[in-house]
Image (tube, one colour):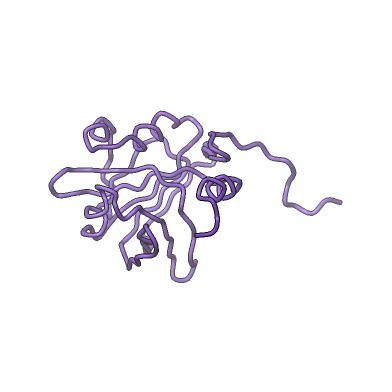
Length: 167
């Protein structure tokens, strides 16, 4: 690559993202989760989302073998949850409390929003896996504001203006 990897990382970090946790019920380890920021809507009809997972992640096999997973958009009150699931190893993740959603996806309390998904497909690109999920159920809490990551730091959202047309 002709681009300096650190410069590329800083450039990509200029795009503010929400912070989410992907979770799965692993038959051997129980509920597992990891902090992600590569998450996007793909389609409303049918309802599809995607997220990216480092191929070398110890959780990759759990997500590839499971039929169901969840994505939780973290609220600004969940910085500790973000850090817990960003830490390496499964032992730290066992301290989290999960609730099993009716479709079989493990959920964390307090999220700004969540999506329970069926794994539809996955693709390998570069050093990551791209997982596509069909949304089976979704919920958002309008009272909770999301946690945002930008240029290596966590932020809160503040409205600048309404999207409604001005008179």
